[in-house]
Image (cartoon, rainbow, N blue to C red):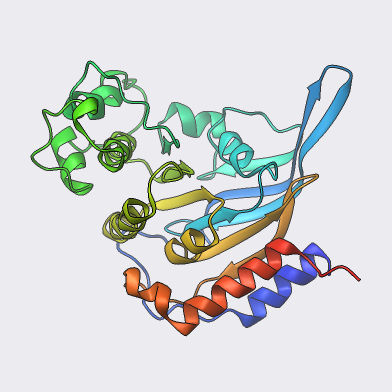
Length: 286
């Protein structure tokens, strides 16, 4: 099955969302990120490595989209292209209707990495305030959240004065998310932010992230290796294959707006997991 055939199959099987538009989101079809024939080739010594090839993808404003795939398929590279950290060598990309460079200079997106990367000598509040200290006067942004408001949004009211070593791994990652949200970005890019956490903490933060997404209406592009995490969090899952990295399939997630950990025990969730696993594994050998 070709990539385009797989996408068509999954689109035809998709169900329409029953929860309607989220607060703060734009009309369906209005792109937050759009790529056309996007490709990246890295030169290493005497050889070239094609990291991404012919990526055609649209992520609409207000969507929660996960990029799911094996190591080396280019998931993180896509985030780095969106954020202007890596330059494509083929095709084109627009971010909120502009170039990634312009979107970066206007601070229209936030980035959360797997490592919370907090400054140990600064309190939680001071870590969240850091982006505001470097805000450019000509960034074109409106009013920011206060650092206290951002910490309240991620459920850390009362821990403003705590230092990173006084916080659990999950709490540190909440501070990292608050830091990314304090500038009111329109897109939140997340590169395996919960990958280093234990399963119980990870499940709890999955629920918290869904709440934040619904409360803010922000566009989220989330990278993960976890099939269950992608299925639980997303409104749409982009399944990628490697060598070179490309989009194998896009699968809509018809699980409703309100999700908690009991969802993982339902037949609907199990069927979705089975379908995503089948797509990741590819066709059975003859």
